[in-house]
Image: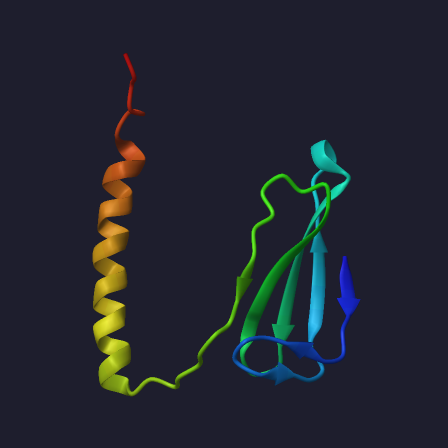
Length: 97
């Protein structure tokens, strides 16, 4: 479900014209995850409502536009992480004694 939200305050700044989404699953109808999106930024806050056992929260605290060089470094790191993810995805789960 998409909800309209006007101003949203975060640690970084107050955003205008934000949009919020409300997510839930059929097994936990009283638990809702709320995600808030700001124009030209994207996801800036995650919250919860109801009887959500996870109570996951996240909030944008800083924002920086990266240079092409900085983006290249990050891109390389992401590809390395992705290679490892394929290895972990094909290994059997850990066992406990």
